[in-house]
Length: 566
Ligand code: ARG
Figure 1 (cartoon, rainbow, N blue to C red):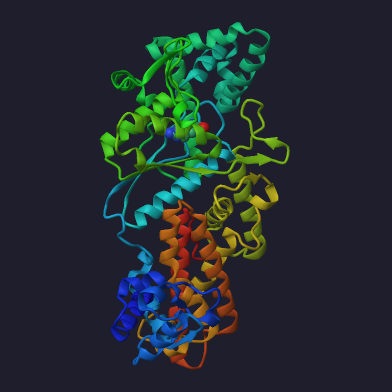
Figure 2 (figure 1 turned 135 degrees about the horizontal axis):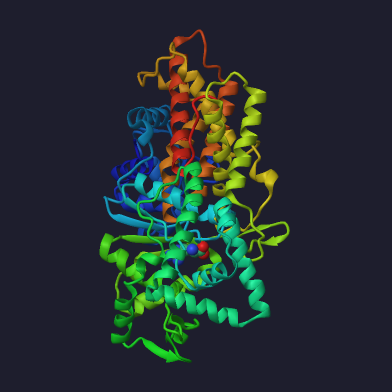
C-alpha cells in the first residue's frame, strides 16, 4: 500500500531541493478536516534555516511542484502547504492491499519475532471470577492478538492467585467449618462462604488470624495435609474458570500461577541479600525504597513467609531467563499501581538492565451502583452469570428478528459474548466503570452487535454468488464522498493498530471499527450495490469486501467473532 506521507516527502524533496524527505515527513500533520487536505505541512520551523518567511516558503514549495502525481491538489494557505490525495489513487492502493492481504490486512512486522509476555486475567483461586477480572482478561487477550498481528511473538501467562496467606485462612476455615457435600455442589460459592465466615469469626476471635498464618506456613513448608486441601481448592476453581475462558474463547500459553514460583524464591532472596538490598524491619525483610518516595517492598514477613511481591520479582526474573522478552506487560486495575512500581524498582536496584522492558498497563475499576466490588463482602457480579445472561438476550433478539436463522445458538453465543467484550474494550482502559446491566447488554448504538450486524450485512452482499469479487475495477467509480469516507478509514486502519499497541489501548481499534461500520452503513444506504452498470457494481462490491474484511480483522483483534449471518 502506498504511504502517502512518504510520497509527499519524495515529491517535495525532488522538486524543492533544499529539503530532504525525512524533514518533510516529520513536519506533516493531519488537518482537522478534509477541506484543508489529507495532510498539511506547516513551514514555520523552516523559516530560520531557509531565511525566509514561512508563508513565502509555503508558496515556493507549491510553485516548485510540476507534476502532482498522486495528488489532486496541492495548495498553500498562509504558512501551510495542503496536500489533497487523488481519490482514485487512494481507493486503488487501499483496496488492492485488502484484496491481496485478506485477513492479514493491517498486519506488519514491527516486532520481528521478538517475544513479548502478557500477564493477564489472573483470578484468585477459591474466589469468584468476577467482572473485575473480565477486564484484565479481555484487555490482555486483545493486546496479545494486537502484538502478534504486528509481528511480535506473544506469550500469554495466567498468573493465577493460587498462593499466599489467604490459603492459610482458607485451610483453617475448611478444617473448622468445611462441608464436603456443599463444596461438591457449589464449589466456589461454598469456598467463598468459608472465606467470608473466616473474616467474620476472626473479628470476634483474633487468634484465628494466627491459625491462618500457621497453615500458610505449613503450606509453604510442604505439609502433606495442607497441600492436599490446597490442591483441591485449585482444581475446583480451575474447573469453574475454564468454563468462563471457554465462553470467552481465551487461551493461555502458560497457566503458571503464583504457586509455580514456590521453590524458586529462595534463590531470589539470596540474590537480594548478596546485593545488600535486604534490611530487617520489625522481624521482616524488606527493600527500602524511601529514596524513591515509596513504602518499603516487603520480601519476607516476620514469620519467614513470602508475599505477592516476592513472587512477582521471582516470576519476572524467571520470565526473562526463560523467554528473553523484549517487553513484558502486566494488566491489572490501577489499585495495584504502587505494588508494581515497588517491585519493578527492586528489579532495577538488583541491577537488571531489562527492568525498563517491563510495563504495567493499568485499567479502571469496576463498581456497582451500590459501591465497590468486594469479594469479602460477597458483593460481586459473577462473570458466568453475566455471560449467560448476555447470550440469552442475544438469543431472544434473534428469535424475534430472524427466527429462521440456522445455527441460532452459535450466533447467539458470538453476539452475546461479543457485546460484553466490546462494551469493555470500547472505552479508554483507565476509565472507571460503573456496572450497569442495561448498558452491558445493550445491542444498540456503538456496540459489538452493531458492528457484527454490519459485518453480516456486508457479508450477505458478498455471499451472493453473482457478485464476483475482483480487484480489476475502475477505481474512478469509488470517488464519491460515501465511498471515500470508508476508504480513508481503511487506509488509516494499520496506524490505529500500531497506536493501540504503543499505548496498550485496544479501545482505539474498537472506535475505529465503529467508525468504519458507520461510514459503511452510510455508503450502503446511499449507494446501491445491485445496479445496471456492471462496472459500477464490481467496484462497489470490492469496497464492500474491503469494509467487511477490515471489520472482521478489527473484531478478531478484540477477541470477538464475526458471524457470517445474523
Ligand atoms: N491475582 C491478582 C488479583 O486478582 C492479579 C495478578 C496480576 N499479576 C501479577 N503478576 N501480579 O489481584
